[in-house]
Amino acid sequence: METTTEKNTASNFIRDIINEDMRTNKYGGRVHTRFPPEPNGYLHIGHAKSICLNFGLAAEYGGLCNLRFDDTNPSKEEVEYVESIKEDVRWLGFDWQDRLFYASDYFEQLYEYATTLIKKGKAYVDSLTADQIREYRGTLTEPGKESPYRTRSIEENLDLFQRMRAGEFENGAHVLRAKGDMASGNLNMRDSVMYRILRASHHRTGDKWCIYPMYDFTHGQSDSLEGITHSICTLEFEDHRPLYNWYLDQLEIYHPQQIEFARLNLTYTVLSKRKLIELVNGNHVNGWSDPRMPTISGLRRRGYTPEAIRNFCERIGLAKNDSTIDLALLEFCVREDLNKRAARVMAVLHPLKVIIDNYPEGQVEQLEAINNPEDPSMGTRQVPFSRELYIEQDDFREDPPKKFYRLAPGREVRLRYGYYITCTHAVKDKQTGEITELHCTYDPATRGGGSPDGRKIKATLHWVSAAQAIPAEVRLYDHLFNKPNPGVDGVDYKNNLNPASLEILPTCWVEPSLAGAPAGSRYQFERQGYFCVDPDSSAGKLVFNRTVQLRDSWAKIADN
Ligand code: ATP
Ligand code: MG
Image (cartoon, rainbow, N blue to C red; front, side, top):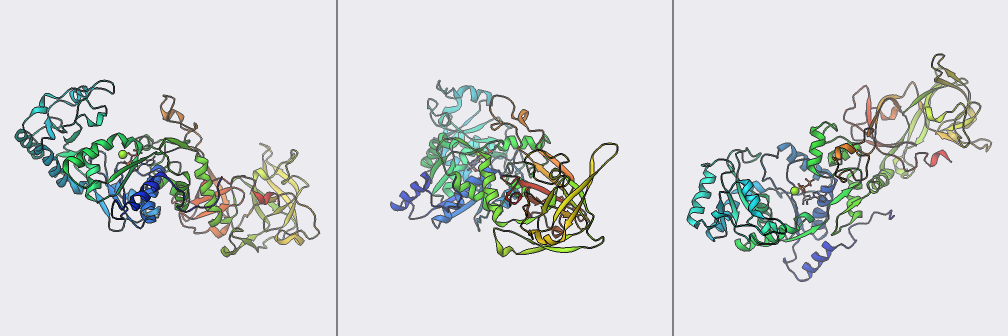
């Protein structure tokens, strides 16, 4: 696998199209894209792909990218979603400057466009019921039937449409439809619905309207009004392109060029707002920003960086066919980025008390530790050492199996940045037999972890000093679903939820340099992985999310 960060140089079919348009001066050298979310949920990693593509291409060609909310469905849209989307796009590192738009800003213009089409005899008011409309539409193999209302006069259509707007009719009594071709092989061209009556308050226009344009009658014209050059969208809109072009042709307005690409699918998760809403509303997760969610806000809380996500989006490239990307690639990108920037610290997740019997009681000394061996400019810090420490339960075995080189009775190990210690004996709970503490001795000549006489030590353990350590809760995450492709097989994807996707470790200890670490700070816990401070942290207790495991949980330091 490629491990360098390649910057926007790889060719892809959209760049090829833009390069050709630049060569032929199709748009006078302009590149103007947009990211057009419907504010009906939080953004997910699939949207990040679209954001990186639209904002990225604009930046690359010295062009512009708009953020536009395609807010045509008042019953599913909320201000909360608008705000979260803005925050997520900004966090990913993109700036729409003064180009924040809403399709609802164009409602009056769209009404005018609809009227224009009626006047040209290209749109009519239909009074069939929703069921009848569906029945008349036909199927992929059978042509549709024309509505008996299709022959209404232009005057009658204008009158009815104006009265629809005025609120004279019940929801569903009429719709405005395009006069397409009921025999078209493309179902979208069979008299597509343009407007419906819907009494619902809109998050921006309130109760001003009781008719709303359909997404298909809005999207293409919005792009046209904004002078978009390359209107990039996912493959499911390929069949809508003839309809969008038809509207623009009939209205005789500026034509953006629609280009479709394959949406991102990821293993072990679902990327559909409808399903993500179900997970939130059904309390299968703790809200949209649950660190197990593939949402941008979930990934942020988990500790993913915008750089890693952008790098991932560039690396997966663009395709014309749907495919599924391995979640491991995203994790690889996160690890690669955090390796460079995350400070190393010591934290003990499953504590076992160690008492160093020959270390003076009450003495505390400060040992120097390196913050990031990958980046010397990150400097060093002091870590306290004293008579009582915590190590990981896993790092001790009473009867060590072959190839277990860590601590055992009579065995010597190195404490990272500390001393060599030798275990003398373990103390057990008389009732349960559980090991409650270890007694050890230390060699004062090994301060800092160096070997004075060249004697060989096979294991290096991380540790914290008990008296100075800070209590912490650590939340470990596994895949949200236990199948690589939870959405297929005809079963409800919710049956594939992984019951072990969250494990909470309530009594962990972290070194005191982490005191007061603000939410969002990211660290590598030596030998354990990358962790991020959660907003649930309080003055008395830090809470950490495990962002991603180290590739090899017995990282290099165990062997050196
Ligand atoms: P969902 O299927 O999750 O509900 P959507 O397509 O309905 O998503 P929109 O808000 O309409 O969500 O999406 C905004 C933009 O993001 C669109 O241009 C859409 O094509 C793109 N997009 C959505 N999902 C993906 C994905 N998985 N991969 C790439 N682009 C996506
Ligand atoms: Mg959509």
